[in-house]
Length: 328
Image (tube, rainbow, N blue to C red; front, side, top):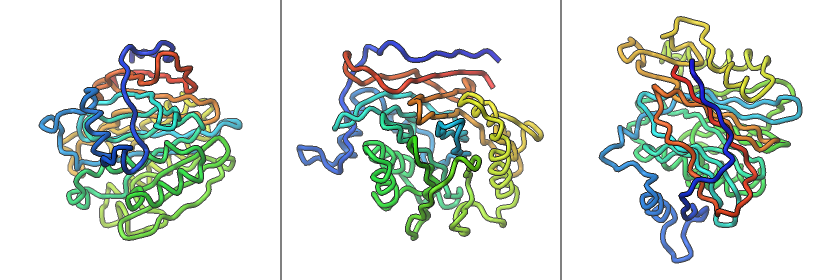
């Protein structure tokens, strides 16, 4: 499969404003409204008429572990339709650099900042529950963005656990020294536990660990089996990881029929009997110790629109970006 790889070295010409981490701007305008207006002015939002059912969910694998002494977070992102993605480098209002994967169709973001704080999330909503969750991805992304405006891991965890009710699902959040799992479902308080990456990789998918009633359950049959199987396979296979690129490569493996839900790398036909149409569209890996953001795009399943650098022309970027692409 042909691949294209590069590390961002030269800044893009386009520049813009910044996303505010607070609830209101200095003029008193609601922050989310201000962000949306700014993003539209920058051409970063897809018109509402072009957005394909924002209630559809990601079904993902998120993983955390270490390679040598470096803490790594990574993710396989599965969708039922083609996402439009940009990688955005920007500064917060207080001058904190962050690099984000930005989904223009759903307005969802996740990524890392200059202090090595990284955040990835996997949902615990099933498709039935998601029908009542309008604006879900935008709300989740806003919480993650606010947390990435933090200078400390403890502050970021507090935001993820409580802001706007807290971030739903499984969230892995870490810096170069500590890693945590935050789990939250509707009507509950966040469960926060520290992980020890030195003992092996931790994976989370789409069934509850501490909240057994959340996400997919045994009554969901094959898709529940898939969630458990993909979690177990990721934790086993990643013991062989010796670089962030190898982490993404291992998460691309298919140990079953290529069209099976059980694969970590999913290519489930739309006409499949159970839960059809899920495709792995892209991957993220973040080396929090070396401040390096990796993104892999499957060109047939993801509309990647390049890197947008919104920092000043004379800004000396601290986070490295590597993008790779392949057909399948």
